[in-house]
Each structure stands twice: as C-alpha cells, then as structure tokens.
Length: 153
Image 1 (cartoon, rainbow, N blue to C red):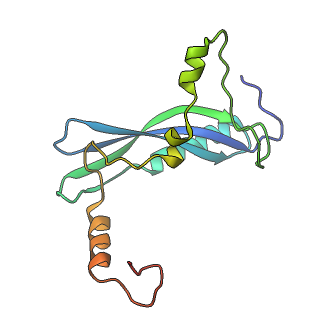
Image 2: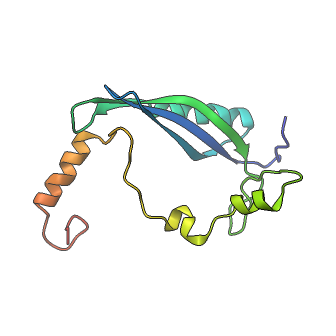
Image 3: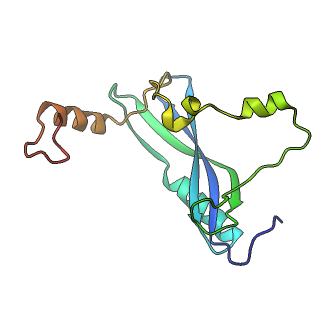
C-alpha cells in the first residue's frame, strides 16, 4: 500500500461520470477531482464511492430528451500529505528520463491555463436541465427590481 501519513485527513478522488442524452450516440464523460475528508484510505474509498453514486440522476433537457448521469467509478484516489495552506503540495507525479521537448509540451502558457481560457460552447449533446433553462429565461424576461443579485443589467 502507498505511504499514508498517520494524521492524513484529506484525499483527492477522480470521480468519473458518464452523461448520455436520449437519441444521441455520443456520450460526455466528466472526471471530477473531488476533495474527500476521511480517517483512512478505506474510509476515503467508501466516501468517494458514495459521492459518485449519489450524483446518479436523470432529467429532461430543453428538447425533452432524457439526460442520464451515471457514476462509472473512480479514476484514482490519492492522499493529501500536507495540511491545507498556501503552497501545500496536494499530489505529485514522477517521470524519469524525460526529454526537453516532452517537458515543454507539459507546460502551458498563461493564456492556455484553464482559468484564463475563453469558455468554449459545448459541442456535445445538450445535457442542460430544462427546468433550470426555463427558470433562467424567465428571470431574464422578468428581472426583479431593487439591484439585488437577481437583477440583470
């Protein structure tokens, strides 16, 4: 088994879920890096599985098609070795004998980092929830006055 510090309380789970839309042969797969508070690796595993399966759901999209989210399993489960604070290392990977071109391909410019990229429209199946889309459109048609968070400017 991997080294687990005696005082380890936090784990990172890659929760993999598969989204399908009725009538569309394509699927959408999300891998969600999720923080788990647990007292042991077994406890972390159990809690990660519970989180994954609790997200299974179905609903209708704006076109009336059934959208299904299904937990596929865990991609990985890692212990966090340090306390949470600025600069704490959460996980690491190790590779040996890597050439400079490969290392360069692993490093992104600032503009290519996820927090700075433009959000691209989803080219896949429409898995938006119809009721949420309708609520948003209704709020846009009839914004509340008063300058609160519901007001659309």
